[in-house]
Image 1 (cartoon, helix red, strand yellow):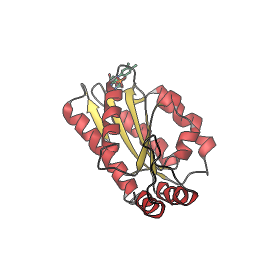
Image 2 (cartoon, rainbow, N blue to C red):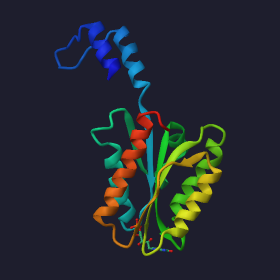
Image 3 (cartoon, rainbow, N blue to C red):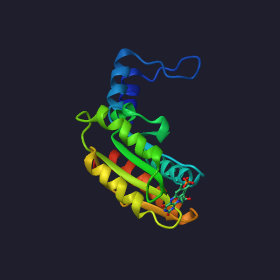
Length: 190
Ligand SMILES: Cc1cc2nc3c(=O)[nH]c(=O)nc-3n(C[C@H](O)[C@H](O)[C@H](O)COP(=O)(O)O)c2cc1C
């Protein structure tokens, strides 16, 4: 990173006995300027039988691809995610199974729990959706979009919907989704 390169040049890249770089106050400040470029991508998903988990893993793989250098990813099940995660995030990827023609209860609970605590505190965040469904997925997508419309979230990528078994092409689409959002954040497009 630019910050590291500058700090090395200014500091002479002093190495301690453990092989770690010892940083002067100046190099710490310069390094921190570099860190200011880091964007935060939050991946929140729910799963009951593992299909959405597999998709979420592929989304994370894309977002953490070696081409992506300045995006930090947080990967959480919906029940473990809360308002602080949304306040931390610069972008969000949400994954849910379709249950009874809707998003899963846990994903709805996450959105319910976090709505008031983050209201007015986050700018509209770029967002993407992935869904695992037995044979449909349209109800879950409709419900997610309806809530996202009332949230400070803005869908910036096409959703990925896997109907039936999660196939390699679904996982590839999920990797692409994760990488597209991360790359867009890194490039300052979102
Ligand atoms: C309670 C329940 C309700 C479901 N309702 C739907 C539905 O309305 N439409 C559909 O296409 N699949 C439905 N399914 C199938 C799941 O969406 C599908 O098995 C999905 O892959 C599960 O994802 P998971 O393994 O991440 O839990 C339902 C499954 C359960 C357990």
